[in-house]
Length: 165
Image 1: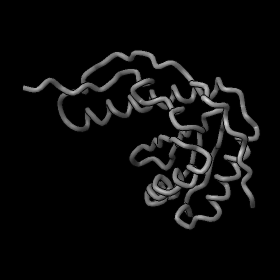
Image 2: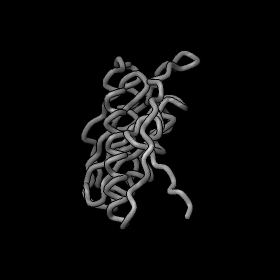
Image 3: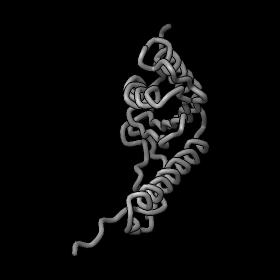
Image 4: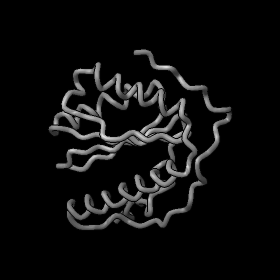
């Protein structure tokens, strides 16, 4: 199977969204469980905003088909990806969202280590979201360097370091 690369985006590539100023809040003080819960909310918010940005983009069929071909080929050819199946793959012009289901925690870890590297042929940047104990991973990928909005640009709250004592 041959992957056909889509035409590159015009240079300079269009920006997706202007960074908005997020409220800066300190991470909760207290035990680690409270901090982890707070952090999960922040990353959930970030991924929801990436989904909204991708949904607003027009679909580039050539790009989406090339990403789909590469993803399917990678899943079929890379032994370390056994135990994972792709649930969905959605692409706009610059952003793609890939959801995968894993048979085990080991399959999820391997997916996170290997799959983003395989997709790097077409997609320059990515961010992976998994929950401990969950069998699902969501991978958000951007076509060009600098096109994946940073967590600090889209998160509801930005983590600030606590003041030194």
